[in-house]
Amino acid sequence: MIDWFKVRGEAWIAPTVIASPSTSYFGGRYIRRYQTSYPFAKLSASPDKLTVSILFDSYTFTRQDIVAFEPGVQLFRGEGFRIRHCVSNYPEFVVFRGLGDPEQIIRCIHATGFYPEGSLYSAREVVLPARGGPWRLWTILVPLLLMIVPFFFLKSLGNNLGLLLKVFKIAGTTLCIAGIVIPLATLKMPFLQRLFLKPGRSILEVRGRLRAAAFGWGVVSLLLLDRLLFRR
Image (tube, rainbow, N blue to C red; front, top):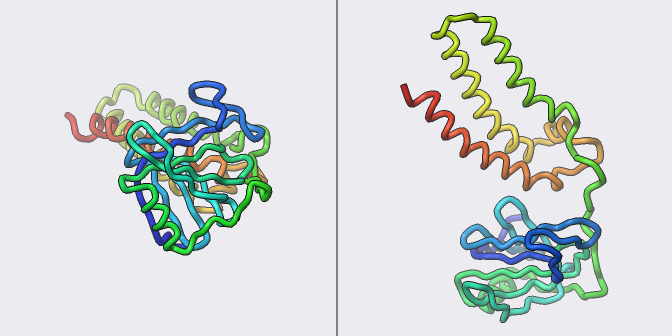
């Protein structure tokens, strides 16, 4: 469904009781505490769905999941509003602050047709990840093979430095592109998800890590390609 309303701002997402500076045990699993500064948090709404996105992850609510919007929460840079919800294994404390007045943002959410219909007694659980890593074992071995095979190939070329340099540039460029394209393609293509993930595991478990991997590898690739292709 297309989002009718979008606004960027900052978000504070954490369990109400915080056990450590960065992570807490809540709802049967460890949940990281997030504080995302403007403009890296986004709130979007449509008549049946509200989503709070923070960098590489997001939390989606239906009307029945939200009990109320509570303005008046003071954050470091200004006033936001709390999204009081009843999804039992989401972080309990979800606060969003846009550049505008919190009550104005709430009115814009209502204008899309989205109104809270939940109660504290209508708790819902999102599907939690199963135990163990979600990835197939061979997926972890592929990057090692991609590095080892070119190494033996280069070794077989002997002392032909010109050819060695060309092969090294091609291999390095291919790895840089693959490190960005494969994570992003896995987010969208079901056959890649079936290829890389264990049976019964969901892309929702790893979407944040895939986006972070693509972004991080993109930064590394810019530095590597600058050295490989654009400097003599």
